[in-house]
Image (cartoon, rainbow over all chains, first blue to last red):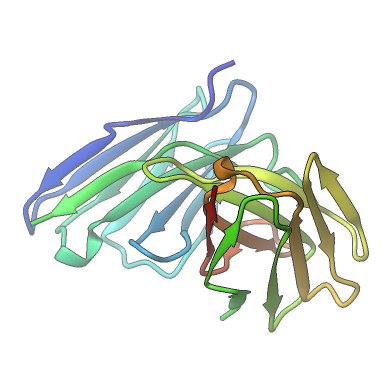
Length: 113
Length: 111
């Protein structure tokens, strides 16, 4: 079975641009979460979606937005990119939002120049 | 906000040695998870713990959910070179919306 898949794997953008990252969850998983991992640190929670509804949001500015589609795939959008947005963006899926372990994809490495 | 303190930050051990790492929190978690991350990849789930006091094994790995629900440890027995990587603890609260991660333990194994 395919795991969580993310695209693209790498991306280079310049300051002020916007970016869209995509995620397909494990088949049967209805909950998708997004995390940002800065080099040398643990992942930081950005969003959780379940059944197309936002279930939680981390301490990130409004430049960050996301959505979940009827097939449970998800997009993360970041507007007005800053240098500090350079990071590995991880998508994770789980069967349910509670008491169900998260399984991560390999991430999208975003570099903002 | 919640913070997880993970220690040690790094370990350099000889192949065959046992390893122990732990996480402590200022807040209670209902679930503790341990992940391993290799370079260029996402974290891979090793062990999930759902009850205070629970002790769970996965091959050479053993993890425990602390009685106070504010801590957890991970032991690796008889380490091998492929154990090299960064190990993260993560706690999930009752709302279940997010994982809070520790800062990671970088494990290096000398053959």
